[in-house]
Image (cartoon, rainbow, N blue to C red):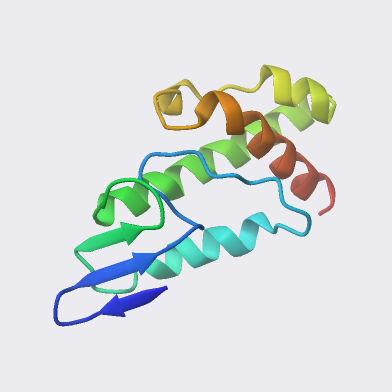
Length: 122
């Protein structure tokens, strides 16, 4: 991450993107660390954010990512509370508000599995 104060431009690569589901099924990935990192980005006085992939965004882009991960966490927790296995959750959990995001169909089930394992390990 890099910030150019006089231009109010933030460069944030690979852990956040513009309305795109992230590739989140890496060993050792800690959901809470990602959420804290995104939340801390909002403390930086940027107006424009440049990503490693896709179009540039603004503060609302990061806010949407935070909302996505909060909604994902809540939906997966509900699946766990209902007794679904990880595989069942990966098949059944949907967040239709984000279905138009890039890589949703491909990577969203991996996001569900990763958050399932993170929640189950707590």
